[in-house]
Length: 173
Image 1 (cartoon, rainbow, N blue to C red):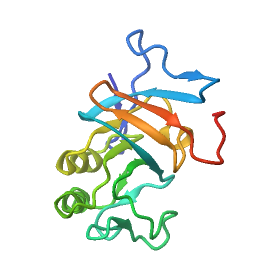
Image 2 (image 1 turned 180 degrees about the vertical axis):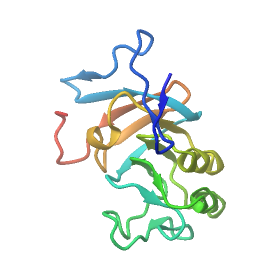
Image 3 (image 1 turned 90 degrees about the horizontal axis):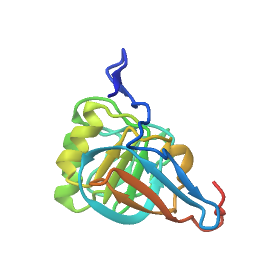
């Protein structure tokens, strides 16, 4: 059970026996396995695009190009099309979901979403984008995953696993 914070976001639930071990690391493979809450079921493998900053939908992305256009954002100009978008959460107005739905309609959507904290904007955005999505993980995906990592997002089972580290980042996490 998670608790609702005063800003209407949820704090992740404490790991239980059902989710233990909370995070598994196999040193020989550099493998990271995180467990979380399913937002949209499905399984996808692909390259992670990690943002350390929240993402704005309305005015923050260009749905036609599938890029982040928020001028001061760390990923300004970066394309998320065909990537697994890993980010802390959504910011801005309720237009967030509409803009991400447009990426689906135009074929520029990410193939999956992993967000650290569930908000109504991020959850609804994942639902209307119709991509596998996971949230409220037992570890911080933004800190543990890197852009370029190849990951398997199994939102049906509630897991995201590092399959291959990004080139040049090393296997140790």
